[in-house]
Length: 186
Ligand SMILES: Nc1ncnc2c1ncn2[C@@H]1O[C@H](COP(=O)(O)OP(=O)(O)O)[C@@H](O)[C@H]1O
Ligand SMILES: O=C(O)C1=C[C@@H](OP(=O)(O)O)[C@@H](O)[C@H](O)C1
Image 1: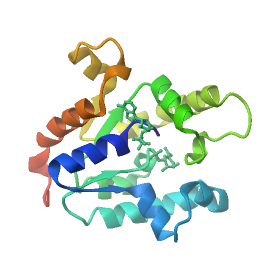
Image 2 (image 1 turned 90 degrees about the vertical axis):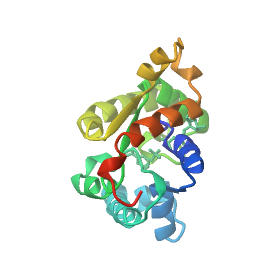
Image 3 (image 1 turned 60 degrees about the vertical axis):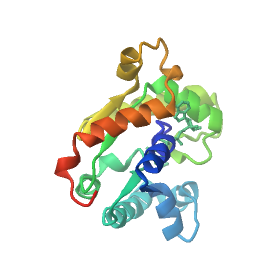
C-alpha cells in the first residue's frame, strides 16, 4: 500500500503503449461502483479477496497491459497462477516512506490502515510493519524486486525520497525486459 504501483505502473504503461489496469478499480467496477473500503466494511477482507482473485483471473487473460495489483494480492497462492501470466515486480519501499505517503493522502481508501482514533502516521507505520513482515516471503516470489534503497545507492542519492517515479519505472522496465522471454502475449 503506497509503494507506487499505480504511479509507476501508469508511467510504464504509457512508455510501452500498453493499457494500464488497477485490480482494485476492477473489483470496484465488478461490484457496481462499490469502493474497496465499503466492500471491506460490508463483507470483510475474505469477501474482498474473493473478488480480487476473480479480477486477477480476468486481467490475466488480457495481453499488453501493466497491472497494479492491491498490495495484498500476493498472499493467496491462486493469485500467483494469474499474476505469473505476466512479469511480476515487487516495489520494495521502506515502511517509514510508505507510512508518510499514506499519511499524506489519507487512509479512507485503504481500510487495513484506517483507524478511527490515534496518531494516523504511527498506526499506519505499525500496521505496515506487521504486514510487510508477514508478507515478505510472498513478495519474494516476484520475478524481480526493485528496492528503493538499492536504487538510491546506485543513483548516488542520499535519500530514497529523491528518487523520481520515472527513475523507478525505468528500473522496472529493465528488470522486466530481462524476463520477457518467459512470457507469452507481451
Ligand atoms: N516515487 C515517488 N515519489 C514521491 N511520491 C510517490 C512516489 N510514488 C508514489 N508516490 C505517491 O505516493 C502515494 C501512493 O502511491 P500509489 O502509486 O497510489 O501507490 P500504490 O498504488 O502502490 O498504493 C501517491 O500519493 C503518490 O503520488
Ligand atoms: O495490502 C492490502 O492488503 C490492500 C491494498 C490495497 O491496495 P493498494 O496496495 O493499491 O493500496 C487494497 O487492495 C486493499 O485495501 C488491501
